Structures are given as C-alpha cells and as structure tokens.
Image (spheres, rainbow, N blue to C red):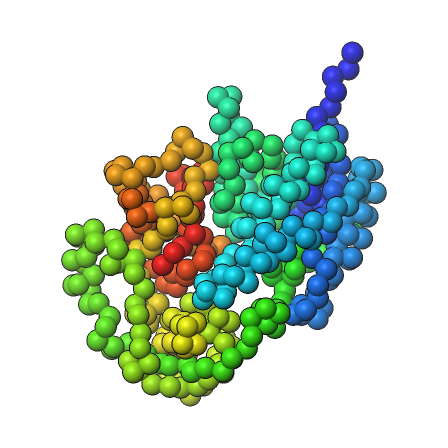
Length: 399
C-alpha cells in the first residue's frame, strides 16, 4: 500500500518567494495546497501605485494553476484588525512604535492561518520567509537565520513558539534571492519578475499619519531642538562608571526632556506620528546637520529633535524589557531571574547588523547591555537575540 503523502498548506501571497516555496515542495513530493489570506480591505492611507489584495490573489491563483495545485482563499481580516491593527493603533497612541509584521506572524500566519490549514488536513504549513527551521530528533524545533544574509527574515518570526515552529517549513530559507527568481523563471511562474511588497504586512505601503488618523486625531504641537551639549547628557566617563557598576536601570532609561532644555524650531501635527531616529517628515530646514527625532512626549504633544545621526540623544548602551514581554522560542533556553548573564548577538530592528550584548534577567525583567552604544533604541520595537545562527528569544523594548 502506497504511503500517504504529507500535506503542506502554503501561504501563497502573490509574491515570488511563496510561489517558489510551493514549487519546491511539490518537487519534493509533498501534497501541496495553496491558501491565500485576505487580511485587509480598507484602502485609507494606502499610497497610489500599490497593488490591492485583488491583484495579489490573481497572481497567487495563476501560480497555483501553473503548478497544478489546489487553490483556496480565506478571509482573516476581522482577526487581523483585532490582533494586529488595533494593537498598532494602541501602541502609537502611547507614543511607542510597534512592529506589525512581527505580530502578524505570531498572531495570524502561525496561529489563525495555521488553524485554517489544519482544517484542510495539513501536516505542515509553509511560507516564503528567508529563514530556516531545524526539527530535532529529540523533539526540539529551532529557528535559524536564512542563508541569504541580505534577506534573512528570522527577526520577523522572533515571537514564534517552539510549538508553532513544530508545523513550519521554510522552503526558500536556504536560497538567495537571485536563486529564487531563477527558479520562478524556470517554472514560468507569473510572479517571477514581480516586485517585492513593501510596507505594513497585508496593508501595503502607507502614508502612516493618514493611516493612523483613522483613530488618532491630528493635533498641532511644538518641535523642540535639544543641543548636543545639553548638560543632561552623560559624559563618557559617567557612562563607563555605570557600565562597570552594571547599573542597568539607569543605562536603559531614556533621557527625559523639558521644553526649556531646548528651543522651538517648528511645529508638527501629532507627536504619536513620529518615531525615534526619524529624519524625514519634520518640515524643518536651515540646520547645519540633518535633524533626527530623539524623543516624543505624547502627553504634552512635543517632538524633540537633535542635529546629526551621532547626536547623544540617539545613543544608549542598554535597553529594558518587561518580565511579561520576555519570550523564548525554546523553553529549554529560557533564562531565569538571577542567572549569570549570557552573551548574545542582538538586533533591535530588521536588517540591522547583529550587535554583541549581554542579557541580564532580573525580577524587573530583561536588560540588554551592548558592547557599543546603540542608535535609535525605540520603545515598542522588538529586540531579538541570537546564539550562532539560532534565534533564541526576543522581547518588546520597554525603554
């Protein structure tokens, strides 16, 4: 009796990566089903020229026909709004900068979508992410960086659990982008030359203030410039003393400003529309060096800026993660409060080169102390730590 083929439900997005994932799985002998998610219908704030989901579905369906695999569609827009978009609005309202793509993977692709795939008899779920998963004989499941270092997307999956990974396959994780395009061309897939999507997961490229104004009202406020010589900044000597003493709480605390610490240089339409490190969209000129956002105060509706990308207001040696926000992909790797600090390689945003740091876990949560000061540490974003190629854990940056 012939052994039943394992079924893989592929999240066909209408892009080249998921298309080649499906093609490779079929070549490997799996019973492949393409499932397209509709996660967003609203076009408010979407920039012109971006393909709506109808176009994505058309490309996904063309790929499924070319590969001769079944094609299904499921509308998850209500769950996406509740779990991702509402969270996004709430975070911006607090003056934080969330990463919706990380939430989308944790809450939608590897939760709601996974459950829909299981209804279709899936043994596995596959996506076109540039990362890898190692399913160990001991029952462990490790998340590894993608082979293409320029496209590695493991960061976006940093909130997945070992249980979620136990069903996951990433067929293009060991490929580089040029190879993916070549395979798509060989198979005459409609997506072979289609541009990669950009912007918010499933929403597309948006004018963020316009998008956020669906729920967050525009409100005129001051832009205040803080000089690099402000007396509130720590000297190198003071910083070194704090690092030597492992005074993590002080090192991780953002600088706090008053309007009287600087001078008004312009106005804005809402402090919650801005993020740390932002350069464009300030509408203020005439400075010797470009202005960057160094802090926002959503209570008093003030945006603080500083000149130059090395402004001391942009640099910090440590960050804090609340206890409930500490996440470990593998529970066996979890650190407990009071454990000896561990050396990890860390990134605090997608595509950032990995940075060496020590992770301390205390009753107050996690502290990452970096070997070199980091630019633009931003509350609401995710810090992810790696041991070799393995993404071990992550957490939402509290400060």
